[in-house]
Image (cartoon, rainbow, N blue to C red):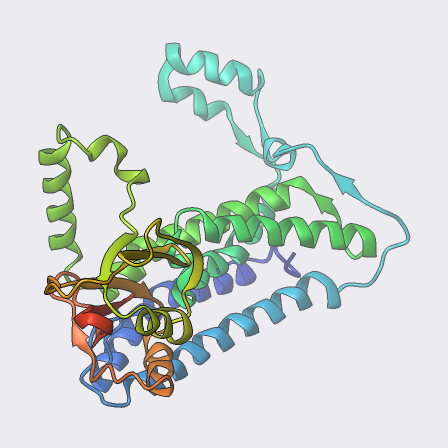
Length: 361
């Protein structure tokens, strides 16, 4: 996919560029954001213009990713001329196999490995180094993509072990098919394998380097997580922890119209069902918004209500705050969640319900 892929200069240049990106980007990002007073973990920032500066940072990262994609598409399509025939190569890793030569075949090498030890590898000779260079370059081209996707977008960070490499595979699959249809290259299964492997390496580098450099207390968090895992394996809910979700809140209200105006008309909850066999005594309103479920029981009595709290998580907290102000709800300044250190908004709803919206990680 890269012109003159077998050139040592090209190999060295691409490798140095990828290494520079992987190491320097998070280091420089952390230092610059630290001087500007920006919290990269989503917590409170010391800079009062943090929201605007973080949007600028997001725009710079997005622009860098777009530039990379433009260069990639230029190399794979625009820099090539159409051929007079269709070319397909679907034998997996055949080029890598042909790059080496053995006296008895690779199957015999694996068999003799258990009897003769590592000395059997002395009988393997490299005869086509350009095939290895081509596989290596195709892999290195996708390392930045697997690295930048979770670095730039929250959606990829939420499933960092699967989403970046999945997108890399889909992009490689799309590229190979477009090259086949436009006859601007060879449809090669090895390219998809090497591209996907490069995306996987990129996302692993993000986890191992970018996350570590932007989270100084990662060792402490890792120790705490391991300690908790050891001590809670025999607890009741631990086996089903992956499917456990507490997303339903039961509240009590007195003014039915105030409850409707606040949760439905202002916050945007969708009314799912309204129940109550005896409306004069109790009217239950079931509300839904995303994964959040609320059951509000409106009673006709005058008995004092207990303290109630509704906790939510939302991405884009500055936009949420602006919409709250437009709806006539003053959430005040950002507070800090004592458990996660993330920003949160707090305000009061009908019947003294304390609503807390915490920023999604």
